[in-house]
Image (cartoon, rainbow, N blue to C red; front, side, top):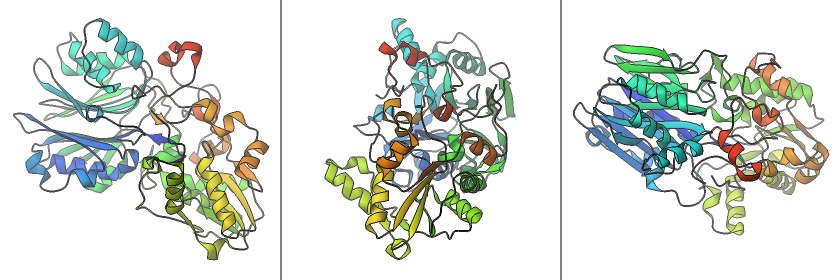
Amino acid sequence: MIWDHDDDKPREECGIVGVFNHPEASLLVALGLHALQHRGQEACGITTYDGEKFHNERHMGLVGESFGGDLTSRLPGSAAIGHNRYSTAGKPAMRNIQPIFADLANTGFALAHNGNLTNAVALRKELINKGAIFQSTMDTEVVLQLVARSGRRLMRERVMEALQAVEGGYAFVGLTNKKLIGARDPVGLRPLVLGKIGQGWVLASETCALDMIGAEFIREIENGEVVIISEDGVESYRAFPERPESPCLFEYVYFARPDSVVQGRSVYQVRRRMGHQLARENPADVDVIVPVPDSGVPAALGFSEQSGVPFQLGIIRSHYVGRTFIEPTQLGRQKSISKKHSPNRSVLEGKRVLLVDDSIVRGNTSKKIVQMVRDAGAKEVHLRSASPPIVNPDFYGIDMPTKGELLASNNSLEQMRNFLNVETLGFLSVDGLYASIGVKRDMSMPQFSDHCFTGCYPTRLVDQMQEEGGKDRQLSLLD
């Protein structure tokens, strides 16, 4: 994927929803995708089954723009799955919008995927050499091909056989003419939850999607688990030997919506505690605490509570400005950034300001925001990151720069401070992040996938190892 240098945040590529046994399945999926819009803003799709045939719609753009009107007549059926895809630069193709669909021997099979397969390139080459014909450039289609080529009789066996061939971080929802299928990778990197609404069942990336449609949260799908939902209810199978779960820490740092619950923990409260811990580890002699909106707000509030320094909205963010990468020139991108973030001069002028952000990736946007605050009259500008320094790229579905582009990977703290033009700079420690979640890091087997901060990757990186010269890059087939 192509990294947007001026929208300097790590981005996850997808959100997924599935509904089974509800007369307005497509409407519920659309509402669920709307709640998960933060996980994917480029394209969206829904596939339904009405008891006789499958229906499918895929669109570029946001859910609300794509799935309005009388949706249940356009996409009828009591079973449906849907997908949001994250925005990237370049010219995305309709063929890469999910769910993807194939006719198999006894059923149709629709599939939607959140995450990234770290051996997708190797598997794709192997399948092509055996005669497979691919219609997209998504790693998701590798799984579809493996399911189609399986010699197993039962669909659950075919799905489990396919999953045993792939590696990486993923959550899948699949739909046949009789079943809704959910699956999560052996480590549990990507999230998936189970809910219930009336007599129907729901699978979704986050609990906020369940809240949006009025579904009751039942439980999280376990790492390495495959669930088969049919008229007989929910059946659970293990596709892999049991191992400890190690979900991605970035769900707490940035990806999940603040009102979601992950592993029984309120994301909002965890982020507040990250601010408490950050204030203990990196205090600052300032007049006002200002969050970098919107993701820095809970941590900034926590920093204010711990330090006693007033919390103020010194930066106002507009939610009606388009993505900065659509601007064709650097001048256009700079103007978009100035429209996206506006200084609240009454809060900043003459003050020693502490900015709190959720993370610092390349540092470009942080640097511009610091200068904007200075231009608004701030006497001093200090910066704190509510996550540890990001020193390694991700290969499990997070759109992130290469190692060479990560600010913390190539610079000392003092060099970063000078680049960002701040009086002081501080990061939350890895141990502090774990403490905010409520656990102490197990050095022998970390409870969370913290590879971006520590370099401890939880799986093999097959495609990465096969790259010429071992050059770091994002492994998506959409490059």
